[in-house]
Length: 490
Image (cartoon, rainbow, N blue to C red; front, side):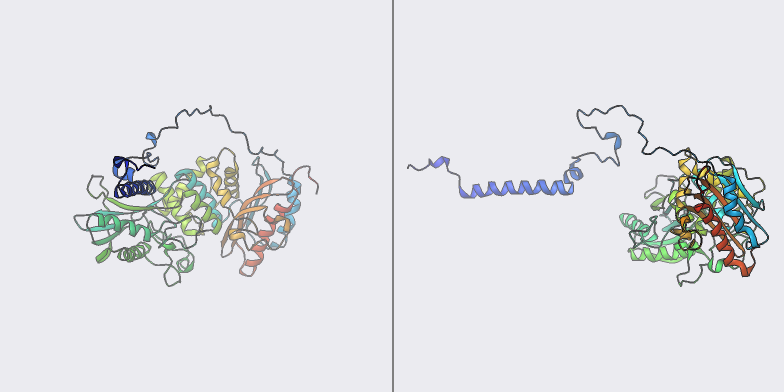
């Protein structure tokens, strides 16, 4: 065999260089794809739909059919009328022996029609925490269930001051939750500190003075109609800026100044993030101008859970502080007054606007801690029917947030007495103060009868407290277990 012509042979070095070049090109392609280098350096690659949604083109040749109305997943069942005689037979025997004391109210209505099917007792009561039903409805209607509250920092470069600004987030935490199952997810000050530190470093800032602004809410931080002992272990002063529900770090009661405590926690988080905090931390008005300074007035921020999620939680666990914070927000939205007075007026005004009569009702807070509050059972029943209406899905989270008898929230450890058939068939908001025991909710009985009910006793003698609470539960359980639908077998 003859040898290859000299000019057709490739030098071994050149051959290895060519192979190496191919490998380098393949590696570069993989790295560029993995880390989006082409898009970062040269603007190649797909448009980011989060920042430029209008620039995202549909796939070539895409043809979408005309939209059609989606079919119903399930057809609503026919309404079953509630039999007043059956309700009376279930409830009336439980009102004997005066266990509920000399002053109580019981009202049962047909949830579908709103018609009264049973009534006994007073026309107005101290509602205690059943007040939170009104606060929750007003918050969803006035603020919107998808709204969020923003806690932010604003930078004053001339003074070298960073200002922590409270946005009225009732669930703001000191740090991220270690429990992945926490619901709803909380915004936290540690994350805000890291974001603020990163923005400051980008401007070459390593040291700051720190101030805090809690001026979103006005008026007294403590409701003047509350019992003096409430601040010991029931609730805290209400503020637009706090952390961890203003609980005392020592584990006993609440801090006296929630905003100052939140600023202290934030200062520690800033230091941990690498920013020195000089001088005392003081209450400071935040800059509000919209000038295009560099950096802008708002340096960093974190956003709360949605109003709807907050509503679900506050109803499930009867969160007094979250309820009063939401009421303050309603006051701001309705009249510009983020205070106890503005919040109470705003809540009643929104409920009335939604078609529920509130004549004679009085509110002094959003939590129901005030013993000066007075509500008609008709108001509570009207709100319950409102959140059940199919054409008001924006209020539905009031219903989904209600504790379930024997299973969830503040009713998880109740309903252990009475008919077992009632467990899981009653959703209700508790209402408890010393001498006051109540439930307001909905019952779905086995026959298809659907009822709104209100049971509140507000002058219970001290020695009857536990018995009265049990009797309230038994009345609700009787409704959940009865076959009160018209035509149903007994």
